[in-house]
Length: 108
Image (cartoon, rainbow, N blue to C red; front, side, top):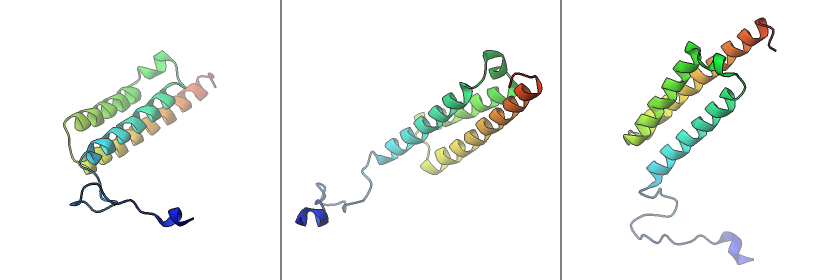
């Protein structure tokens, strides 16, 4: 029962337990990008190809591309997060406009 309070010792004596590893920034960028890509794909799958060629979806795709470029360019986590937030808003806007357009066109 003593294992519940066990805290492993850091294998690196210079880094205290709980401190991020050197590769953690890369992992954070990857997680942010993967999460955004999944959100983009799920959102996009709701609409047909014609709808996905609208300016709103092209803008969302461009925003996703900027996030990818920032991750590949090893930009700061703050910048990547900011770009992810902007891309998320673009995707939300594209979904809203496409949904409204589909509703008024009688497709929904």
